[in-house]
Length: 153
Image (tube, rainbow, N blue to C red):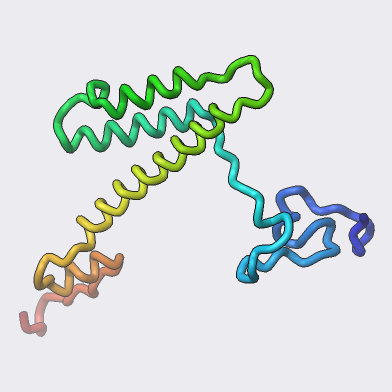
């Protein structure tokens, strides 16, 4: 399978954009899912990274409650579950992968809830706002009125 342009193959990262070896167009994500593309999942990454992310989110959640996160039952359960499902000498450990998938899903939920609350607090209606506050909220600055001789205040 060679490309039609001088027989060159695109880099692996570019295959997503121009298709496999330049012969087929990139998949249209708006079309109904069919074929191999629908069964691909994002890589979960390292279980240790997921555990650290979960503990970080639990720390954020318990900081609002005002108690140490290590003492919470959720933290103790997560740590004990990860210890119980460590990688063994088996080549394919389905229980460990299921735990990792559930932990990654729960991490996504905790992170999304925290970010949603932060956005809600920032943009929630606070009554009437001045034009300067509204401009600052969307990232604009209002022009300054020049002062000095001949200008009314």
